Image (cartoon, rainbow, N blue to C red; front, side):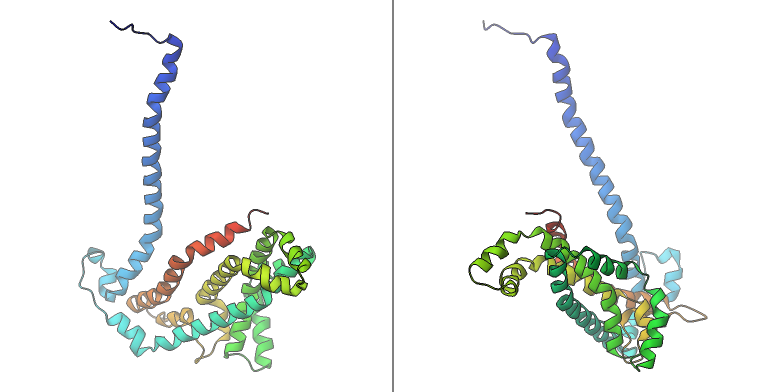
Length: 292
């Protein structure tokens, strides 16, 4: 018969702890799953209610018994997209967001590169001050100045006002990204005969594409969702989507069905952009967290 060996009593706690580890790991996985599920439900519940309400009449929206079971209707979307000409507002929002983001990138990326390479901390602090100042405190001076210049109601004033927030955001994102790029690459390019500007255009700029995409996407989302600047500075022909949604709110009543349909039209493009570009946003934001 084979000899049986008995483990010392000192090994008993170690074996017991190993048996408990799978139980603890399984409990942790369930806890994490339930916590994530709760967070997702809390975040998606308002969006789900908005989409469902966009297919209801105002009477059904106020009826709690028809929260999930109701007869859907597309009249709200017909009212938004056809009778109220929301396609023009969509084009206005897209043009203002695209123009303000493009101009901010053209100005902000070289500025961020200069501040990063020449350690211009005071200039960076001034840019940060523009980010800290509440935009509502500037609306009255802006309206006074731009009205005297006869620019209120045009695209130019909307683009400039959106650049006031987009430009500091781009500068700070790109500063941290340029700080993470090794300076030796540019020095090697200059040894090979490139000028400092040539090294920036041919070496540094292509390597900073993820950061540029991150800054551009975030700036575009801000401009698309902006309501306050467009409410004061836009005109009847340059009205953007967030301002157009406000037309469903009157003094006596609120057209909840039309309001939810218009809100869905505003939200869907941004959600699609966020879903398809999230990996670029995450990579761009995390790339500047480490140096070298």
